[in-house]
Length: 564
Image 1 (cartoon, rainbow, N blue to C red):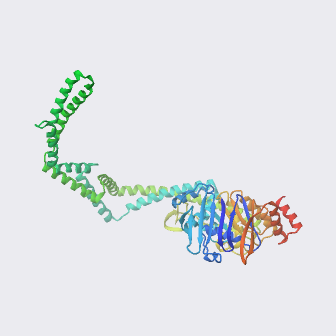
Image 2: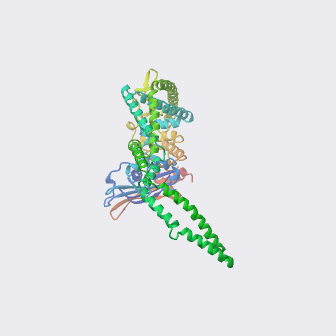
Image 3: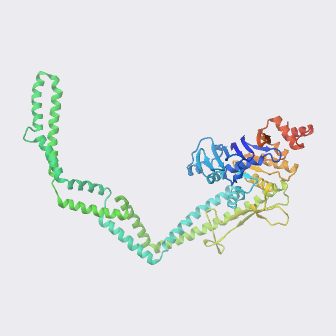
């Protein structure tokens, strides 16, 4: 939900901090006090287009901060992660600065207004102006209708989506076989050459590293032999070899240990060292033998390394990558050489899945048509309750033909994972006028009431987290106002609702009542926001009933509306 809105230097709002609560929040005040400015400020921080002239006279920029409880928006986390934005448990803080150097932030990280707009579509719906209203976008109507249709319709859609994925995959594979004969022959020759070139070398995993080490030893064979031979001479040479001296020391120390047993560990250490030197002698002698120069072997290693590196230049950065390329080339070659038999097999599979998909799409369209009739009936009932008795609401379902689409009833239809139906909500508010798309028909308070009807019907199927209604009571009387209030109250049971209203019948149903006042101080006008306690609510609703100076009768009626 929306927890807090902080607005600074936005038209008449010089410094306003408003806290909101769950349920129905109403904003009341005299005409021109600035109630809709708060809605405009919220729209701005949610990414809606906002002119720079909203900056308060004398200020360099306007700043709006909105704090949302992140836990209220389970669908938000994947989008925040995708955008690479920080996620703070408990809160999502959006900031927008307008005028001067326009800036935007999410949880303290600089971002763009486009990102605010994308997040805003998930956070709130604002009804009362056209921009930013998801329900006015035809792209959302199919999703809303399917959600209204419920589990059975959604199961049919899932089935169609699964079959569509298989159909698209099979057709893609079939098309890949339908390359020209010349191109296929050229590709077969190329693959055969590449495979034979790799097979002729027969590389082994890890071979390049082994050969590089062997080459280093062969190139440095003389120096290696000299060094190892020198080490052997130092240990076993004629002039007082180290091994002889260790042996003599062990004999002498053994004699001394007869008189001093404490020397016994030293004797054992020397004898162990003598045995190790004996083993070392054999190893060094073998190393000297191995270090013999072998020009023929070196040439063989150089040639093998050159062959392997030639493969790496063409087919991969490592021997393993070259072998992987060879396997993939072999599979492609097999597929191309068996293209005719594979094509016949694929054509059979495509025909089978195509028939299944056509059946699934027909069933899905029939379920949508039935859901559309139910939705029309429910919306019309709500529109009549909302003082729009002449309104006609229609759900238009149609399809588009596509020469490369799904065969169905003698035509080929454009299909997608969601089926073939294009869905759009249509409305007529005046007798004699045909239903037209929502954004071309309703406006102002009339539009807000249409959205309220839609949202009341769709709320449980597609629940928003925050809904804002401005002008929803425009041009309606007391009885209709009570109906609007009841529907807003019902809607607030599944989401947070903010409503700007002039009707006391609506204000009396609020869970949280905010009064907007315009004051003039030192020649400047500004707007302030008050949270009303129970007694102040009586006064505010009495003012809405009788005018700027409430009467006792108005106060009594206000208490009756409030049930106190």
